[in-house]
Image (cartoon, rainbow, N blue to C red; front, side, top):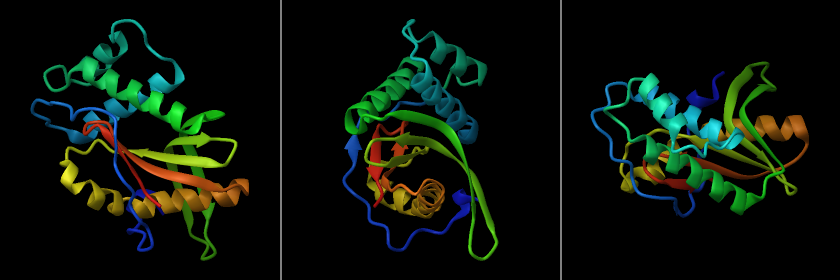
Length: 184
């Protein structure tokens, strides 16, 4: 089973949005999936190795993915940096696990496999963050977070069973929109 195909978690609640910046201005987006992958890669790179050189990595990635006319590399780099700064301040992570693979065998014998965009290990437990390159307006963010609540629950179940430690928070990060949504 793919966590991203999981039905909404009917017991989930959505918390207050955390604002991290302005909505990114984009040109015409012909392939939203690829734009999401490019931005996702930049966020991961920023977590692992911050780029101080005038957004050179962001410029290169945006250009290489064919989005030079679509996205401002400085805005993408700022979104990644804002997120990293927020996560560091909010959770004081011990370890940042980027694209963390999970495999979880359910009681039914079905196997859940996927990759957690970001799994933060803290002294209190784990934090799961899923990045979504959605262009939906802020008025629809609660609905969007609910749509992915099942995916986050599948990740939570896998992490808690594998580690014996609690997942203390689950978040949807919307880099294009400039915000985060907690899913409880």
